[in-house]
Image (cartoon, rainbow, N blue to C red; front, side, top):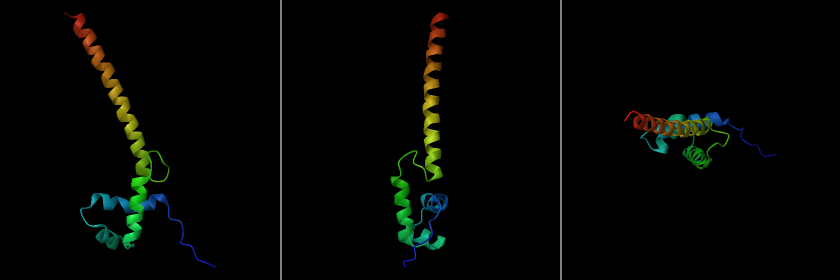
Length: 93
């Protein structure tokens, strides 16, 4: 019978990939510091890069989706406010 490794939580993988993103060190150095294989860290980083926006799994990706939606909403509000300012500026002339 083959022994399969335990499934790791996506949060653990994300917490492992985050130091790599913030660091100027090589993948090998970061992997060594975290006590995991460099190939494993590399694979997790690729998975994080390839995961589509809104895909379940990495909390940072879910947060990014929410933030992008918020930015879009703010740009929309800004456009409305610009139109209001122009309307009232024309009315005061």
